[in-house]
Length: 260
Image (cartoon, rainbow, N blue to C red; front, top):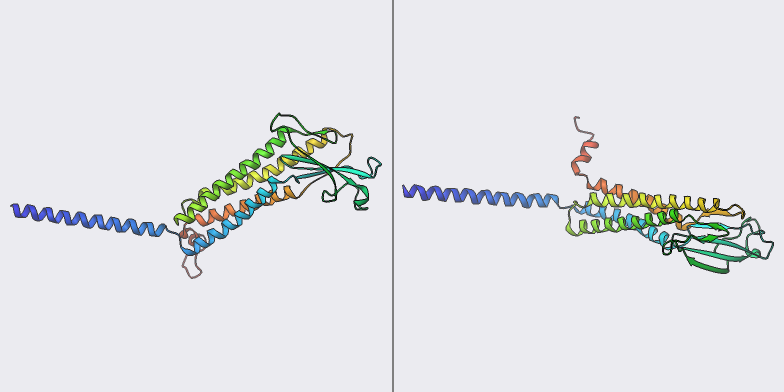
C-alpha cells in the first residue's frame, strides 16, 4: 500500500511539473507573440518622425509672435513713416517703417521684415489681467487667453504621446500605441482649435474700434500651428492603424485567391 501511495505521489508531482513547464512555455510564447516585428518597429519610427515634425512646427508657432499682422494704410498719417503691428499668443510688436521702403503696389504698411524701429511688449492679461491696446483697438483677453491655453494643452498632449511612443519602442510592445494615438489626435485638434480661437480674437480686436482702418492677415506662426495640427492628427491615425492586430487587415482586405 505504501509503495502505491509513493508511486501515485510521484506521478502527481510529475504531472504538476509538466503542467507548470507547459504553462511557462505558453507564457513565453505569448510574450514572444506580443513582441513587435522589425517591420512594425520601423513603421512606428516613421510615424513618430512625422509627429516630431508636427511637434517642431507647434513649438515654433507657439514661441513666435507672428500669428497676426495689423497694418495701417501706408499714406494714413501723411508722413514719411507708417506703422504696423504683429503679435502672437504672448507678445505684440509695433513697428515704424519708412514708406519709401514699402512696395509701391502695396496699399498697407509692411511687411514686418522691412527695417525700422520696433517696440515689443508682453501681454498683461496673463499677469495683471489688463487688456492691451493697439492702434486704439482693445484686445479681447478671454479669447487670447483661451487660444494660449489650448496651445499649451496641445503641447502637453504631444509630450504625453511622445512618452508613450518611447515606451513602445523601448519595451518592444504595441500596448502604448493606442494611448499615443489618442494623445496625438487630441493635440492636433487642440492646435487647430487654438488657431481658430486666435482668429476670432483678431476679429474681436478689429471690431472694438473702427476709427482707424487696418489691414489684417494671419502670418506664418499661425500657419505653422495649423499645419502642425493636421500633421499630428494624421500621425495619430497612423498609430491607431499600427495598433490594430495583423488579422484585422486580412479581414478588411482578403487575398485575391481566397474563396470568400
